Image 1: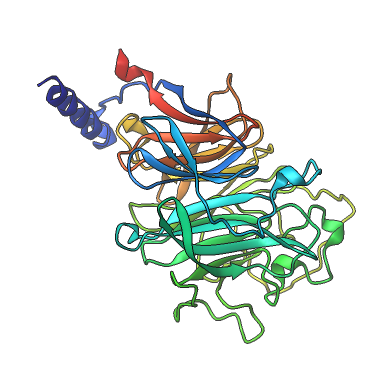
Image 2 (image 1 turned 45 degrees about the vertical axis):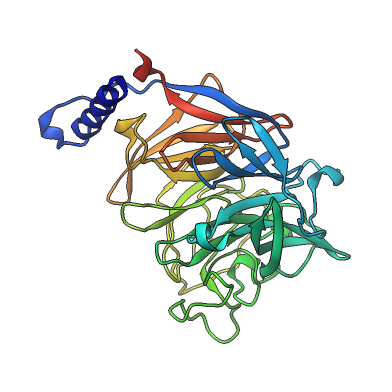
Length: 389
């Protein structure tokens, strides 16, 4: 009976907070607090909920693991491809290699398929690779390459690797341009070169083939490109309310962005940027007649945005429909309130408890989690202390 009463109260609070503003019914104060669920993770990058407590977690400096959030147990998934470039073995402070995103197929319960992005290596360098595999008995079987962002290069940064399935059932993913400094750009910048796989966002069928309704960029364009002009996008997510897709974008110096993905759009890098170049002497080539898509929002400071999700949980009813975004610099968590795809307000959470965070995610039941980007990385649940009062 007590559980039923609590449920009824939460439902009433939820609907009262989403009435028209003219009702003047205030939402209960949000008092976010952190609760550590797992620790001793090696720079975790992504989490995929197989159900409410059974999860897959990728470690940038470690393994693909499976964890039980109730029992606090974890198991290393066997069979990961041997071409993984693990950043533990590379001595460069800017090294971004390792395992990135893991997501499940929309029909995972029936086909057991998961998708993983990671830094792959050969004798000439590394690049971003995406595979599909069947998860059986804590082992990867029937591994199939979906995408390899050639060329392999010696650069160790800006791999991208964010992935999501759209409401259309298509796989969307980000590939970074891989350069650390603009001085290394060729005459036609990588992110603007349609013959180059890097610096783009892709849309593919779940088997890796190209959808017929993708934008047509011409005969010289790489297959599957959905948008271009990308510098270093990691986070990408779907708005469950309307199916729109949003992604975060690292600026060079300041100018980090939040973008709404549009078919065929050019997001400008490095011709246009909301921030500054790392090389102040760099002059981008003119591209007259090219239409660039502006970010929905950008930050004047560097926040290094990573994972993002639309909040649909019950713990914070006043946040419903807002974007929750994690960052690697100057803060761990941001709440972005939208109205009709326009940013109305931006709030930084935990200003007195900042920590590098790589991913923010919701469980199937709407619990909010973040992964901290640390040597002793943590899976942290964000709870509302106001619900305990």
